[in-house]
Length: 362
Image 1 (cartoon, rainbow, N blue to C red):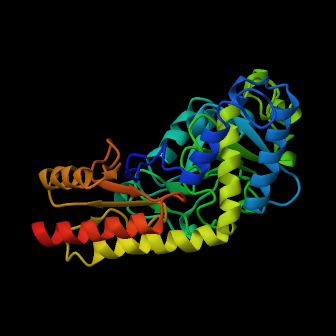
Image 2: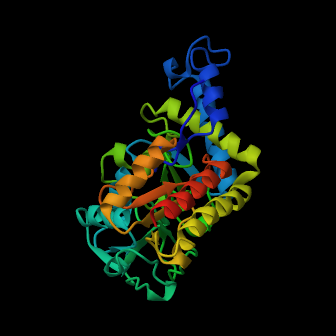
């Protein structure tokens, strides 16, 4: 096999090598099907069992209590930006959003196309450098829900604790942190996550929904947009992204073999520490993009003193086998996305490269 790059892409992101190899071995003929799973009818027993098994596995790993379901949907988190307010923002109510980054702001703007919205708190004036303290939140008493983006992929920040809402339902975008650290997901009525970071390949979105909350959803919108449609049909109302769900199931099995979310969190903390230490000991050569208490475990972001030096860093990184270290096009800078499948050894190698680059160019 050609030497694999050290993949720090933000999504689609690295997948565990053993998962890729297992999928390769089953690609042409899956189990006893005599065909690829991609060719099987979504009404077949094999696919129905796959959906059930993947749901059970994800609920167990997230430690959600009874009363939650997993829906497998398309459209990524961006579709959920619209589906959440379509289902739960009813006339006479307001949707509250905590604005902590670009994707949080996109979700807020999408909700504004559907109904009345309110900003519960915003860190935009600080350049998204910080996560607001829980006591900075102002949730309107007529709020239908409060929406949080638990990890800000572009900016590299994360909520470290779930704020109290006074009984207002919580909706959370956990796309870039689910299964990467322990989260108080039972405090949420709805959690969604695009798979292409920690759950699997692009193409499927996992929606973890309280059945009680789902029963309150709007029934006046088209069936294909209703969460209850997916609940009632076990995600099989229309053809789901079968192969992406299959890959997710393999990734979930891999997380189980690593020791579950608590074990992944310990490794991710060690990975992030290596890179943040390289930033902090550089004497100002590297500047972290986020205040230290709010730094993400999943997306490490930093800058250099000028754009040309950043371009030089990226060229050198590419020639040394690193992939995906450019910051998001909307903000520039540098970013290492260190999701579960990125190894501790890969982060150690990147940290050493960063130290060496700083010595040579500082």
